[in-house]
Length: 97
Image 1 (cartoon, one colour):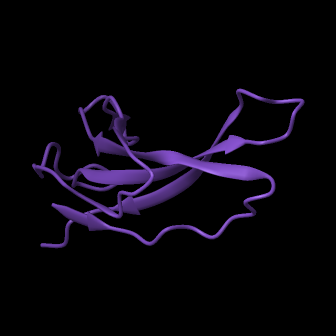
Image 2: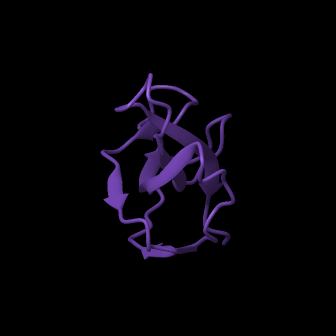
């Protein structure tokens, strides 16, 4: 599985790009919502990632293939929130085929 993305647009006066997280989503059979694996943290200069793909659970009502989610992480530059990380994402990638 090869994932690619562009550097997001953001206000550099308010936020600093902190990095990206790739999260594997897979169905374990306990329901129709995929479970999330431990995130893989990538640096700010990353614009892609390659990982394994496996089909984990078939024929459920929520879908039958595993996929990946890429979240963008920003550090809030507001002095009132010096350690707050803002997560923007829900960009889901699923293999076709």
